[in-house]
Length: 47
Image (cartoon, rainbow, N blue to C red; front, side, top):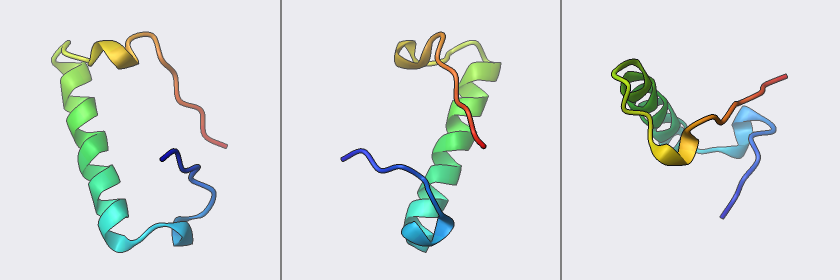
């Protein structure tokens, strides 16, 4: 299910840790030139 990250209190500690792990994994993959095709050309915007 899609959830928008509106405020940090909307997520449990475990969910936040998993997001950080996934972020690190994707960052390493991008650096190694192995970005998943699903994310190819995608951008993320944060305000």
